[in-house]
Every structure is written in C-alpha cells, then in structure tokens.
Image 1 (tube, rainbow over the protein chains, first blue to last red):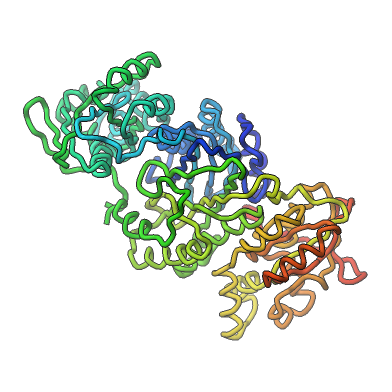
Image 2 (image 1 turned 90 degrees about the horizontal axis):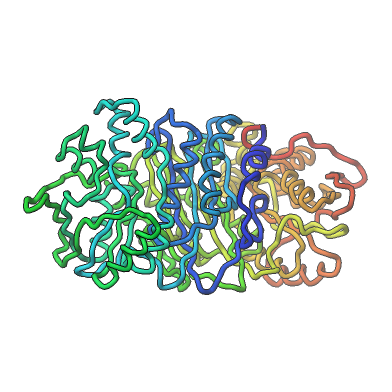
Length: 319
Length: 319
C-alpha cells in the first residue's frame, strides 16, 4: 500500500469537521481561521516505542495516549483544544494496527471536538509526534510563572497509578488482575484535564500538568515563579492501591516521583480560592489543596511536622 | 546531561524573537498572537535517519533540511513562515551533534525570521519532526485544487540535482568531486522557495512543492483540480549535470521522477501570465513554463511531438 493511500484511508475519515478549518488534510498545509482576541496555544510531544510506551502496547492505547499527553499540555495552559497534526513513523504498513491507532486518536478528538488537520507518515522505527493547538482568551492563559507568594497549590484527581503500572510491568510489584487492569488503564488511557483547565483559567494564577512527576513539575512551576512551596504528603491524593501495595512511605515516594499522571497542578490566590473550589465542585471535578507557595525558593515536603527528602526529581530522559 | 538542560542549552539561545510570540519555549505550550485577516498555515514533516537522509549526513545538514522541507510546504501555500516546533529523537545526547544540528536550524530560521517556539527531545532512533506555521492573507492561499483549464504550468529553479546525488550515494553514477559537491549541496541544503511563494500568491491559481518528484506532484495538482496537463520535457529546466552524466532521456527520466527538489510548481491564467513573469523577474527568481492544463485528466509527457511514458511516479514510502 502506498503512503498516500494510507493517509487517505485512515486519516481522512475522521469524526470532527470544524468551521474554523479552511483547509484540512490533503494540501501542502492546513489552513485555520485565526482570531484577534485569542492566543493560539501550541504544543508538541513525541512518544517513542520502548521509551514512552511498552513495545507490546496496543495500537489503540498508543493513539489515545499520543493525543492525551498533548491535550494535557493545552489543558495546563487553560486552552480549548482545536486542531492536531499527527506524524507517525512505522516499521511497516499494518492496516489492522492503523485502524486501531486511528480509533484511539479519534475517540479523544471526537470527545473534545478536535480536528485532525494534517501530518506525515514515514517508514522507520515506531514513534509518534503530535502537535496540538488550541485557543485561549488573551490574559487568561495559565503560565508556570504566574504564582504569587501565599497562593494555594491544588491538584486535580489522584496520582500514582501510572507509576504503579510501570512497576508492575517491570515486575517490581505484584498486583491482582483487577488492580493491574485499573493501573494499566491509568497508564495507557490518561484523561487530559481539559475541562478543569478551562474552568481554572478564570481563577488560577499558574498551572502545569504532571508529565514528569509531581515533584519535578511542582519544581518547574516554583522555579518559573521564583518561589518555593510547602507540601504535606498527607494532603496529596495518592491512589489507594499505592498505599495498599507499597505502604505509606513507598506510596508517597512513588506518587511524588513517578510521571505520566497528567493531572493538573495549579495555584490560586486566597481571594479566588472559594470561587474556584465552588466552580470545580459544580463541574464534579475532584481537587485537593496540597500546599502553599512561599518566598523560600525551596521545595519543602513534610508529613505533618516531619520534613521528608526525595533525591529523585521525577522522570527525565537521558538522566 | 538531563533533557531539560539540553533544551535550555541548545534551543533557547536562538536568533529570532518575534513580537507575535507571547510565550516561547519553556511552558506547557507556546502562545502566539493570531490575526483575523489571515489564515494560519500549518505543516508537519518527519525526517528519519536512513530514509530521508543518509546515516552519515552531517548534523548541520539534517537541521537545515528538516526546516527547509517544512518551509517549502509553507511556500507552496503562499504563506509567510513565522513559527516552528522541533521534536527530535536522539539515540544519545551528543553536545557537538546538537550544536551543529541547531546551527543548521537557526541558519534558516534567522534568514526567514522564524521563531522556534517549542518542541520535544526524546531518547530513541534518530528522527526529527518539525511543525512549521505561517500566515497567509485570506483569499490568497495557493491550494492544489485551484488550477483552471488552460492555465499555464510553471516551475521555479531547476530540477534533478538531488536525485543525481542519491544516485551518486548509491554508486549508480560516477561524478567528479566538484560535481558531487554541487549535487550533494542540493540534496542536503535545499532552499525553500519562500519568496517565490509570497510573490506568486498574488497571481497564481494553484501551487505545490516538489517533494515526491515533479511527475508525482504535478499529478497531485491535476487530480486535486480535476484536470490534465501536457508537459514538454524540452521545457523542463533540467540541471545541466544530469544531461552531461545521463544523456537526454536518462536526465529527463530522473528529473521527472526523483524527489527532494523543493522547487515550486504553480499554475497561472493567461490573463495573469505577464504580470507574474514580470514580478518574478524583478525578484530575480528563475522560472520556466513547462506546460498547460487541459480537461483530459491525463498527464501527457512529450518531447516535441513524441509522447513519452513513465512508469515511476516519483518517490513514495511503503511502495
């Protein structure tokens, strides 16, 4: 099968058609209608087989995750996702694989009304690079450097399941089939916090998504804002299965250092705290307040009154 | 060296800083200022080691080419290039390689005033995916489907050198060191026809860049416009070194079927023909009229009155 037929067959039959796309797949470029009042937010993430997903991961989960990690970056900016480009490098054309892969992509793009506007298919070792774009009203974008001294630090959902799944894959922990299914679902089908991002942009001062690990990403936010933070691990919404399997200390360590959770960490002033909590509660989005920003420029992790130390700063390539 | 230090060291020290970039490298997303009057043109291209460039290609040429092929797509749309994201997958962090690679990128981005706004660095087999974005006034974008019956078909520059370079690499042809240098320069450092694209958008009806091969890309343009074309190979600006080395027939065959030339093919009505030729002549851009669109929906290649046939339709992956 030739490249162009692959593109036609699997990528053009997509569920979403947006009015702001003047030209989609099939020309030298896509053309989108811009808007003076909004910034366009752009992010790019690559997933490589054996690095970002197991070599035996299902095509559907690879497609899902490649979109999810990019939409998570848009969510962390408070942006509404609109358009994606998908560059996929494949060892061979496998129609069944492509069918599942695009199904995984389109499940998310349909849900979030995102149009696939282009991409590239090339021959080589399996990897996927997606560029996702969205829009955010000017003045509402949530950058990492916006936190102020005294702001409260929040996190959506719970953390640690994806990290536990990686431990299970490496046979570092034994899970029941039911537990394993639950944590593998968290690892392979992360849910980008798109709605949360659009709600908090009205109230929050800064945000970041957890891709490298809670500790690493909180550190990025603190450094960008030139502030420090106190976090009490008792306040971190650690998934219950972690505490069951690893005990309190092991669970906290994993929850702080493992990546791939794709929850949002955000900061909010004392003034906006109640309004933000109310809005997120109305939207049925779970959040936890885990700490407070301070002037120290230090990341101080405690359990109650006891200070803890963590040498691992989260997931980094090439480390 | 950690991933984040790599990004900081090699990608943030870039030559261009545009006013329309509200947030560049360093947050979850880049933010760009949009404009109601213009479309944003978006394109993505992946280069894989051993497929799109030789395994021993220099890092500088890989960086240059990865940007050039994307800017060529923007040129084919008549767009002004503005912003790029670079996703690079590397087997290991090699600072000398990264220095040369980013130098190759920045040579072109500086020349064309393009800002690097983000990307991703990952560990794995060498490949580069760039997403490039530009702007084009609404109503001026050059799509493939705009050609009309009777429109003249033009091409910029000359064709075939990159194809001859590939033959030399495969030892299918013997070149003098001087000839080899010239054709390798064409293969490794293609010059995207950005200025030509912005001039012709005022006059042309359709355009495409030659990435897959003259014949294949003319075919794409004809199919999209639901028309056919007559092309006389005597009118094709075949690089002289091809005729010297391969004779007239071999040169024509290679010039028609080899990819990687990154010239523009475009169509123009009889009414706009003179104005377009005058403008391009003022800008010192070489063009050749190679044929005329017709209603046949056939690609008819002749040499004078003799009809020629070509089975190869250009460069395709997975073929």
